[in-house]
Length: 290
Image (cartoon, rainbow, N blue to C red; front, side):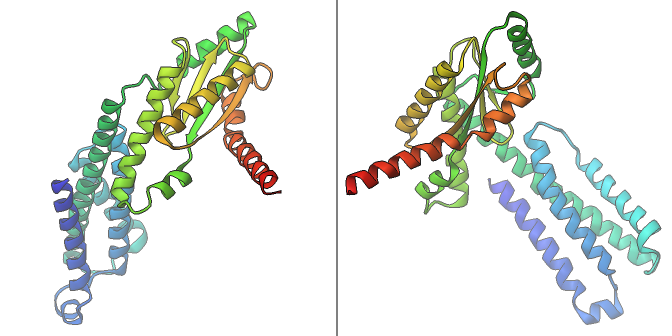
């Protein structure tokens, strides 16, 4: 965390220094007159590296400093050769090129450290609550095999989708710092994954997508049994975490014939059960008042 703070401080100080010096009239007239397009490119570099690099690092993609710096230097050269034109002396363009390289390196360092911190938090939450959830992309072959088996032998198959009710949780977590909220949410999702793994049968496949949503693939399971399982999971999450998850279901082959169609159908129903519950509670309250 301290290294991340240092990286952010250096990046912010560097950008502030460059912008501050460039806005001094005496410096522009007697030393270097930076091109406005240079500042636009620096802003794009910083934004891109902070948003993209961290995400790639979190997914395990390895990128070197030299690759990032070289890429943005090439972008600078191509932009000035084919778009911006040679509106500044060669000395100014060389200095701007060096500053672009420094911007790319500093922004990449911050993005890299953010990605590493995300991976560390994911590892801590998974270690605290061991589970057997698989990444949905990595389990495509297994999913296809189960769908094919159900189709061949005309056996039922259901999927359940689960999503943490973040609006309710954030009201519960009100007063915490943003980093604390992020950590609480990560550990909550990991705990939900553990609950799913414990309540699901050994033949059920627990899946997780990049948005933190869960999919439970249930072979040999009809709609009624899938609904009962979803209600048990929802009750267990509520009892264990005092939080709420939305869930939806879809059945093969009655409602869809492919996994993607089943998933789309179940996700459309994610909030319907919660809405039905709210309506029933409101009706009960109204009857009591009457």
